[in-house]
Amino acid sequence: MRPFKILILQLLLFVTTFILVIPPLCIKLPFSKFYYVYNKKDDISKKAELLNTKRYDKSLAYFGALQPDSSKQFYLNMEKSGQLDLVVTIVSVKRKDHENLGYLTQAVARMDKLLKEDTFFKRKFLFICNVDQNPYGHEEAKKLEKYIPVTHRFHNFITYLEKSPHKSLYQQHSFDTYQKETIDYMFCLELAHSMNPDYVLMMEDDTLPLPQSLEVVNFKVKWLTSFRNPPIKDFAYIKLYYPPKWQGFANEVKRILEVVAIGMVGTGCFVLVFAFRKKRSVQHLFAVFGAIYFVLISLLLDRQNILELRRLASQFYSLNISPGCCTPAMFYPKWVIPELLKYLAGANNKYHTDIAIYNFITSQNLTAYQIEPNLFVHIGMYTSIHKNSRKDPQEFIFFGT
Image (cartoon, rainbow, N blue to C red; front, side, top):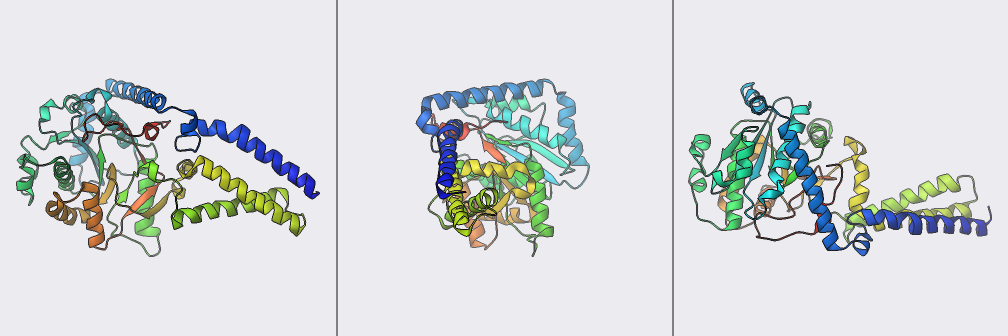
């Protein structure tokens, strides 16, 4: 093929891709470079709220089809059956201005369904940890109590943790917002640990597990502890959610190397498909075009959307060294929890919870991981900490949940 024809072929491919295919695709994909070009923030907010309403209605229908007594008894029987593999704790507080959004109901419905269908963790227990200072004013938790075990930090907590070394801390009622958040987290984590499971999954009440989450966690834990060379049995935790806004391509060495790797894949694909038996000069030309083509597509879609390809199989998920932020969904082995609680007890008024946990692992020289892509999604567009505050709505546009 002559160079002129090669140039025409590449030009047609680029025009088709970057004018007819990529822009319409990017319009629908949050975090892509064209998403905010074609979508107004107010329209995205309305769409996110509509998706939330649909999920809430679906969750109410789920509980409407359950037998309350048998649902709750499922977990009580698990607790009596012996050594638990996994305890899932949903930390919850009433959202004073936005309780009708149904975040807790959605989180509980999704996790309850996953646990009851799960075959990877044989013995598991789920409970809501209500940390509202007016526990019986948390109407959403009260409604769910007939389906799921619920504990209350500010009502007869001695029943749960009578021998806790942090009992005096849990009895406090006067603290600032972030200090309370850390002490609440401690209480729920220690309560889960008191049941002596192999692992504890701590999740906030505005996060949803994705359908494959337990399967992937189980696979990664087995890989870390048994198949990795050398095995790592003493990891501190696995972070199951990290804000997508910080998962994009950036001026960081690792992210730049990812772009280079994508370009190399493009080089190989173009040479293999278009110029495998051509002259060396023609192969070089196609190699350059392939690299540019793949890199441009990746940068326009951005890394958050490229990561979605890893969901094809559990083996494709990656484990990276954990960053400091955040705590919506954390998976802990039981051995680390007593020392973590001890550290948080002394740091609860110095740092936010996530930073305190991160400082703990760095001070103890422990290894912790973050999984990519996320196994949980964050649905809390309205936070329980800052009154009437709303986050970037594109973070809450996701499908298949």
